[in-house]
Length: 385
Ligand SMILES: [Zn+2]
Image (cartoon, rainbow, N blue to C red):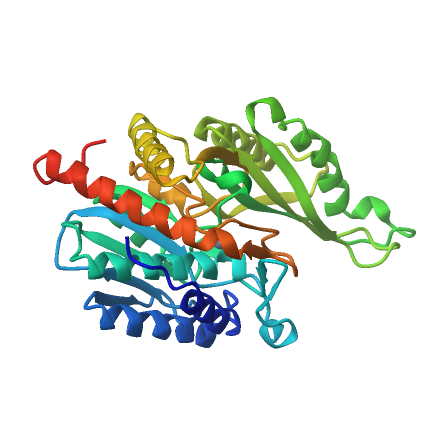
């Protein structure tokens, strides 16, 4: 077992946390990408940089050789949800065993964990594994540019690990809800609310009619939820509102539930109650549910046995939050998430990860790579789950 250099790890995370890399900060994400390109090139890996759109940060696709089939796909994102200036406002710090700073736990910790796993794997001669590491720059905005690449790579991969932070008590994530966001725009006709209200068509009145109808779609017991999170509309009280809109977040464990929600939206568009109003529903991004397949269960068993060997108490947790694991799982690749060091309070000003969980997480990553290498050798050069 090689020694793990925690100090170097923390120095790298500090460097990266102190670079603002919000999803819309292309320059910042590029700086993070440059850091990893250089590091992985120094390891002798092939680094490919994808630019999907000018307004999105780059995505790195890094491989430890030339190959078509990928044994292990590892994924993380370089973007954060924080605006420019956050890194200067509250730079990386360690307090009482926890590391803080924008993106510390979501997920610059996981990115650096992937790098140290790649480094040790390379020093071990690669263990006969074809490994591909992807770092995208648009995960926090639904991986608008990179989701096609992630899906394509997942289809060619035997197993996928997402290095978002692990959960409390060593728990990893094997199940995530699907999600879809929508905007419903209502267009009516303005009129003076005192002089000629009958000449108007209120977009707000129409929208208000639909909110209770939509809320009826909630079925928490089967994991379906619909939240009308933002409503806008109208101008002043004495004018019949010509426009109104609402933003809706939906979550579901089964794709059939998303279809049920979408049927309601098309019903809404065709069944307006205020004459003169029209409605248009737009989908603003979605992720399919990540549900464990039989192969995922086998992969979980491998991870559990590695955990038992090294004293990492592996447990599993389902979450309502989405990640790129939703795409790789939907592409048919057994996918596990939460592989990064234990962290929490993502997207808040006090997100963190636990420093003493860094090394065990690294050991788990290396143990998994060894176990998958042995699996590949035992199965004539292809991982069988
Ligand atoms: Zn994340």
